[in-house]
Image 1 (cartoon, rainbow, N blue to C red):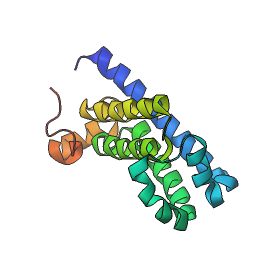
Image 2: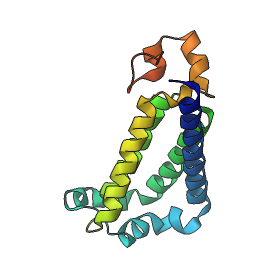
Image 3: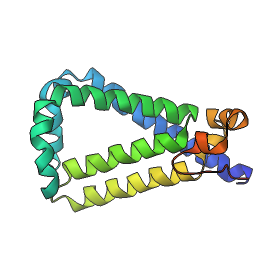
Length: 160
């Protein structure tokens, strides 16, 4: 990838990281969200899609744990995006998080559902394009380890 597109991709990666970091910190600082607000927030935008409702009893039982866990994972994802560390794996985790959000909160709300699906696919694309190789720790890791170890699961070789 030439220099200008690689830098633009790195800027997009950093902005996405700031968004995930902000989201995670705001989750952990919201007392209402951490203790009973997770299900309320999910149902306020449409609730889970039909076949995803079977998971709801487990979410109710472990709501406080899941709220803390999603906040911490969002913070770690944001830090990894900002620093460009293991972007392929980070993008896969972010894809799973956004896809889960789409399934858990978009019943009957097609614009929201399609937007979240598009965002999750864009996160996969960012990981596939090697966004951490410019201004990121991935470039340093590639020089010290094999390509496929650093770029797993979305790539096997670094772009030339």
